[in-house]
Length: 126
Image (cartoon, rainbow, N blue to C red; front, top):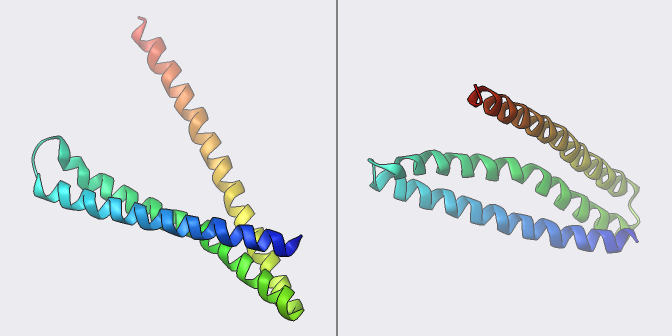
């Protein structure tokens, strides 16, 4: 079962790396369009490019942890190496810890957004 999980996490991490590549390409395109049109609504293209680049860097962390889990798990199963097995589970724990903290932060942002929308709607009723 661990070998099967390692194969799937390799596949998912490679897809994640491809997604990160597309995000970087999108940010480069936004930089190019935003800098060529310095006036008007596309001036925000530079800021969107920075946002996409930051998002790609942030997205790299859990994808890289997932890839390290899969590569260490494959090595552990291939050579019956206890150290690689421990490292694999350490990377998996770090991956899920990152995703868990991110989920808590996003739930908090959603709650704040709903409260802000309700307060904005209530102030508009006056």
